[in-house]
Image 1 (cartoon, helix red, strand yellow):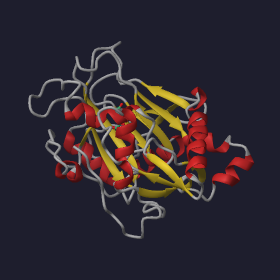
Image 2 (cartoon, helix red, strand yellow):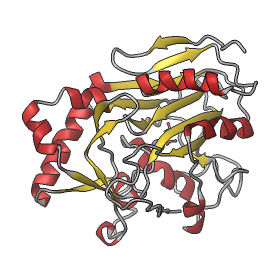
Image 3 (cartoon, rainbow, N blue to C red):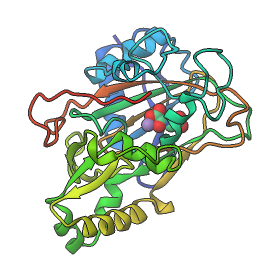
Image 4 (cartoon, rainbow, N blue to C red):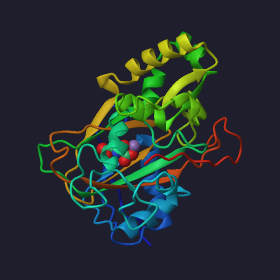
Length: 313
Ligand code: OGA
Ligand code: MN
């Protein structure tokens, strides 16, 4: 069987690409998956336009990347799941009770508020996430925002001075979903005692096994670093975040039409929702599969086989 040829268009000098030439309405062969995977490994974030993917085909294709995570921990914490499948994370702004745009005070919106901070998905779980595959279902009108922005954590790491690289090499990040929510909405979560809640430990400097390149595994979820004093941890995190958030490491990808899909590798890029004037006004229905990390460092320092997960409504 002939392999469809992929047309790869880079979107930024150091990462990100758009790929054309894949027909997602047909079953994707293992050979074609292998071709797609090479592009994802190299570029870290890859967009496919107008895929026509259904929920079922989206989930089926995602299984090539590894074990799929699901929303059970969020449901257990009281979140109502609007979508048919547990493997679909709801990254949109639809109120599950009414089907309309959720009020800015609704749990759906509050739950996704932290997405505006540069993060990697599910680093707060014992086993971190590998790839995320986000598919647009309903998009707000053009010009009202809703693009997703990415950060190149491999190149940002490469560019650090050697003495800083040496200093951060042994450090371990403590990741907390609650910390990110509180950072995004300090007033709303003012009584939340983040330090009394579970944190997951992952090394700050990681090797991205698929490319062999190192990267800075820093995300909004990191509450503090082990291996240095709390004061030094705060300083280092601020310094590293300031570095990685520089415009030259960023790439904004607009969503053009329903069924556009963006695949990113959480173990080598950061991402964030950019918001916009559509918020609270127009529906934005975005559905994501999240693949559990399949690399040798998937459990971080949480213990081999540890698979506890954290949820919040
Ligand atoms: C996500 C996410 C950003 C967006 O789905 O993990 O962070 O733009 N989404 O919706
Ligand atoms: Mn995310």
